[in-house]
Image (cartoon, rainbow, N blue to C red; front, top):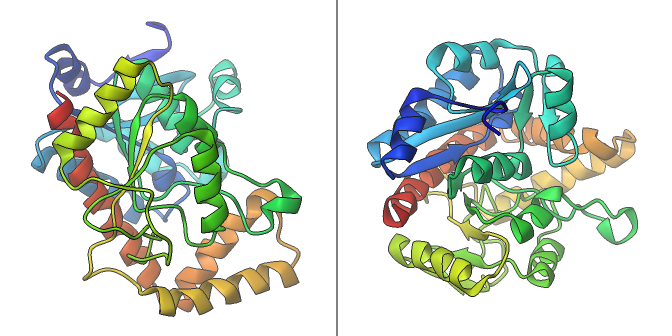
Length: 303
C-alpha cells in the first residue's frame, strides 16, 4: 500500500501523532459545482475542520495513486479539471482508475475505502446515496449502503439525498445492520430539510458517545461503519413542504425526457437548483460545513 497511498505532510504528521483527522470526499469538488466556486467551498470545508480541532484529508486519485489530503496546488488542479475528464469513483471503479493512471474523484463509498486504508476513522460528507425511486423494479441502490455495512468508518451526513426513496433507503440500511444515528433530534433529516417525516432508528447527541459506539462495534467484532445523520442548520434549511413539490417536478421532467441510470442524479440536482433559484446549493454548502464541524468533534473524541 505504500506505493498506492500518498499522504499530505499535514495528514501524515497528524496520524503519526494520533491527532484527529477527518476524511473529505472529492466528487463534491469535481461534479458538485463549477470552478472556481468548487475550489472556494473545498477550502472553506477544510478550514472548518481545522477550526473545529481536526486535520482535513481530502481524498482523490491523481496520477494513479490515492492522495490522502491535498495541498493547495493539487486541490486547485483537481477543482479546475473539467468533470468530464475525472472518473467518479465508487467501489467498482477505484482499482480500474488506479490501474489506468487516471484522475478520479471519490464518492462516499470510495472515500470510505481509502480512509480506512489510511487509518482514518471519521468522514464528513453532504449526503449519502440510497435506494432510488422505483428501486423495487430497477434495483437502483447506491453502493454507499453496502459500503457502510462493510467498512468501519463513521460517516457524518445530512441524511440521504431527498431525491431518493427515503423509506426504502432506511429499510436497506436496517437490513444491512448499519446504525443510523440522528443528532439533536428524533426525526431522520432529509438533506435540504431537517425532517423527512420518518423517525430516526437511533439518537445520540454527544460526539464522545458516538465515538464510543464506534469503538464498541470494533470490540464486538461487528463489521461496518456508522451513519451519523446531522440535520442542516435551521437558518439554511428548505422545509420539506417546500422541497417535496420541487423534487416531484424534477422527477416528472426526468421521466418525460427519458433520463435514466447515472444521468438521473446530476439532472435532478441541476433542476432542483434552478427551481429553487439557487437555494438548494446554498443549503448544500451550509450542511457540508455543519457536518465537517461535527465530524471534527467526533474525530477528536476518538483520538
